[in-house]
Image 1 (tube, one colour):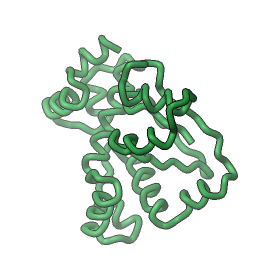
Image 2 (cartoon, rainbow, N blue to C red):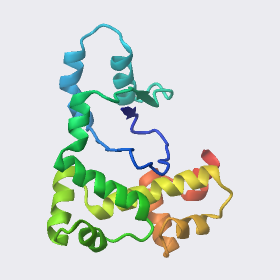
Image 3 (tube, rainbow, N blue to C red):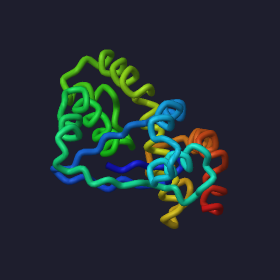
Length: 184
């Protein structure tokens, strides 16, 4: 189980047949209660949570726990609700450039309207927002790790309209793609 700081830059490599990935996004308000449970004594988990919330420690990137074979975790990943989310995230991961909700609904044998509502209800964001987040994160990765032009990166992640790409990239990261590359 991997816990990532919300500001961590990362890339997801293609999964193998037995790999499972579930993305839980936890709002900072959740930790008001959790910090009381963790207590006051210093430990790695408490320090990581506090560093993530305050943003004071830039090295608080992730914590990794080896949980293979732990029954409650296995049950979580195998239930139906988890399966739907895994299918949605897997589809987006593989088809973020041009994947459409209608194609995903057809693939999973669900009504497109129902699937759209279920994604929003369970994740708190729309399918379009999830795809856009994946595209922009992939663009950020390519800006930092390749010499591709900004235009080629925009096209590679699925944006034909470069003006729109620049606008939403700036909204997400607070700077233009070119400036992001220079800063990172």
